Length: 427
Image (cartoon, rainbow, N blue to C red):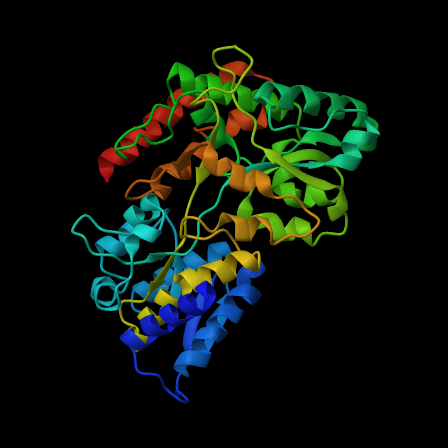
């Protein structure tokens, strides 16, 4: 009965924002950047088509090309009708009214914004109250390990009680024992900050971007402590030159590394991999800052982010686009998204459906993370203006490439502090 009511509610939302058509003479074009999600989202879009009569075509564009094409469309070309938006760039798109305002549709159709994660709603709401996207999903981070590698070199499996020091010691043992086989203890793609080194900064008590989005504490003693732990881990992991050439996921699936950290959006890649039976997930380690041997409040954080469904400001079919977005973000569609293992929902309370979507693989580490301290992925009005430079030469790059030198990492934290502060000043 609950499911029938949910479907009925979704139908009412669609009917409220457009007339049901028997066969539309146009197609809503949707762009995303993750091929793992394409099939599931197309199935959900097809459900909406069955109601509306309007075909939907979902196309995958790789990450770099995605933003190039979107920017070109915003500057006079053609933007996709509906697309994903992200914390890196959404502030600029909102400030320039390059996305369809959804307020009138939300009000007319009675969309309950309190259902969604508050930080994600806030991200896609401009200071003047205009809403430009509805929350598509949320994500958390976990530790992925290869049981076969741990067994081969006689190292105990990770547990949910691990500290980062425990991870370092295990990685070091694997690396030493597996040297002849070319096996590394762990791998970290330092350019993937959300699922990697960001979390250590917060675990040790600092913030990449402060809560008011106007500063950083990455150059503080706490920030340096977190990045010092990152440095230690890198000494027991694949060199950044190897990671840059091969990628952490490929190294892991080639049985060349014992551990990586990864986001919930990537589960399908490992669930469908050849050696998936050897792959297990554990909670992210924590930082035992006070040295009492237990995880206290504030010592374990997981970064989370949330994509938004948005529409082009100049789409020829605004009513239909708004209707599709509302359907994607309805309770019923969000449950289906979770049940299909597409990704975790943007609506609160739908985590169990996602945790049960991968028979034979325990992914509960991702839902357990929701009981930790969650922090929203750091952003400012122009995130890329500081996010890219702190990961390049003059930022952390030298320290990541030469992790054997602690002094480089301490200096990099101070440089990153300056780079972020200067970028925010220019916003």
